[in-house]
Structures are given as structure tokens and as C-alpha cells.
Amino acid sequence: MERSLAHIALFAALIAVLGFVPQIMLPFGVPITAQSLGIMLCGTVLGAKRGALAVLLFLALVALGLPLLSGGRGGLGVFASPTVGFLIGFPVAAFVAGLVTEKLRSAILPAAALGAFLGGVIALYAFGIPGLALMLDKSLTEAALMVTAFLPGDLIKVALAALITQGIARMRPDALLSRG
Amino acid sequence: MLTLTFPVETPLHRLPAGLKLALLCAATVALFRIDTPATLAAIAAALAALHLALGRAIAVQALRQLRPLWPFLALLALWHGWTGDLTQGTAIALRLITAVACANLVTMTTRLTDMLATLDRLATPLARAGLPTRRLTLALALTIRFIPVLADRIDAIRTAWSARSARRPGWRILVPATLAALDEADHVAEALRARGGTG
Image (cartoon, rainbow over all chains, first blue to last red; front, side, top):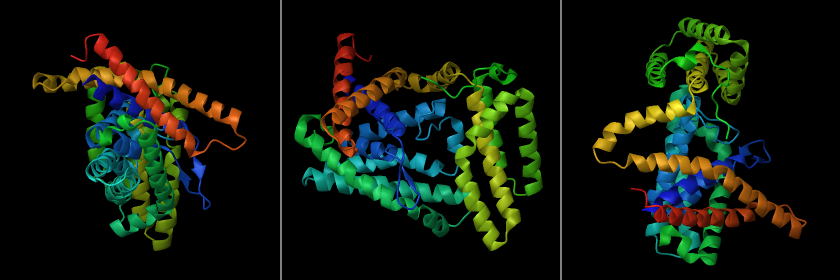
């Protein structure tokens, strides 16, 4: 019990710290942040349940008024902004990423990559795009068009999440709770 | 750790947090039911007046917090300039700004301790139903405490990398950074168990 709680709290802190890492600009001016990489790692490293709880804990702190989202954003305002769908999708993304990593009995690298992709891209966009459409009063196709610029960055993060998860599996196999 | 609460006390700071949150919910629901730009503009103007009445500094801070919205406003301007439907575009933009500013105002005028107390109160029925709400409070406190600790650890890892390599520390430092979080979690778990567990 204590171990689960400590892991959930520490990974919520990790997501926050990854938000402080300066943004990297992709060639065509789209910012990518390490924060969504943290969301994927919560799933692939901690597993579905603990990963999703870590993300929920992080979001709770944001809602309480701590400026922990990348770029120093936070407070209740971010839940009224156009990107609210992505925030709602965050815990689902971690859950899906964790579930795939847990259930897929292949080598860790492809399992984590597929998990990070299905969670951090498919599941996340499945919430983010309708949110954007609703907040900006656009159709789903139009909203989907708006987020395509972020796809390359997110695919890079999928690859990084898989590589990092594999690195941990090699160095400290018993620390990888998603395969525990 | 800094919070987004505005340090200078305003009359809004003294209102109960629960009341402010309830009002915010009602205001947001109402905003999404209004479609006429004139009504939305009047509400936005009233909100701006309220900010100014609270003080210049808090109004400036509120404007600064609206900055992340500009890409969306630019997008709306381009989009509706293209389709020629400017009335609808204005309504969407005004609604967006007003909804976000309302929520930010609640955050700015409510202390973290008041927010936590309200959360605790809202969770009381859950605690009676047997859900472990004490663990939630403990987890929140642990996360707040360990954000600076982890940030320091990552800084140390980055410095160690720079001492050994001329290349910039890229994503590779995220492996030891994640391991640091895992190690720290094990220490915390042991410390909690030694002090009687999470109850």
C-alpha cells in the first residue's frame, strides 16, 4: 500500500518536473514539451492503475492552483481553455499505455511503444479533439486538422517513452511495476 | 513552491472557497448557453470592470494569465476571417476569454489551504463511504514536497552529464531521472511503513 502511494506521488511530481524542462521547437514552429512524455511514462513504467492515479493526482494539484502545466500554466482556468479535452485524456492515456504494457507479453520495447502510441496518441487525441471542437465550436474534422501539427512531436515522444522504459527494464527490472 | 494565488488580499479572497467554486460552475454553464456577441461582450466588460475594481495589479496579472490563449484566438480570427462568419467567431472568442478569466479569478483569489480544505470537505461523504481520503491528502502533500527534490536530482544528473561529455544532455538523462523517481518512491514507502503506514 505504502509503496503504491509513494510511486503515485513521486510520478505525479515527475510529470510536474518534466513540465519545467524548456520546450523544444520542431522545425515548423510547433512546441513540444516533455510533459506528455511523463504521462506516457506513468503508464508504461507504473502500469495502468497506478499510472492513471499518478496523472489524476497531478491534475488535482493543477486544479488546486499550482502552476505545474508546461509553460507555468495552472489553476482552474486551464480546465475552461480549448485544450481541456487533452487534460481529461491524460489519465486515460496513462491507463491505456499501462494496460497495453502489462498485457502484451512481448519484449518490453515494442510493448511500451505500442502502449505509448495507443495511450499517448490515439486515446489522448480521442479526448483532445472533441474537446477542441466543443470549445472552439468547430466540427471534429476541423479540430482534427488543427492538431495534426503536433503529431510528429508526439510520435517522437512515443519512441522516447519506449526507449526510456526499456532502459529501466534493463537497469532495474524489478522497478518496472507494469511488468511486476 | 509558488502558487497562482494573488498575494494582495482583495474582498474576493474573503469569500468562502466553496461559494466561489459553485458560482464558477454556474457561470461557466451559463456562458456556454449564450450565443449573442453583444451579451457576451457585456459580460466580458463587466468582468474586466470587476478586475479593475479589485486593483490594477490583479488586472495586469489576469491579462498575463490569458496569454496562453492567443494561438487559439489567432486561429479563430484566421478561420472566421476566411469563412466570413465574424459574428460567430467573435462570440466564440469572447466566451473563451470570459470562461478562462472567471476560472483564473477564482484561482487567484483562493489560497491553496482554502482549496485543500474545500476538497477535504467535499471528500467527507466519500470518507464515510469507506474510501481512503486520508491517503489522497497524504499523496498531495508528498507530491508537493517532492517536486523540488526531483527537480534538484535532475539538475544534478544534468551537471554530471556535462562534466563528462561535450554533447548536450538530451533525452538520455530521462532514464536516470525516472529511476531517481522510482528510488525516491521506495525510500518514501519505507519511511511511511516505519512510521505506521498510511492508515
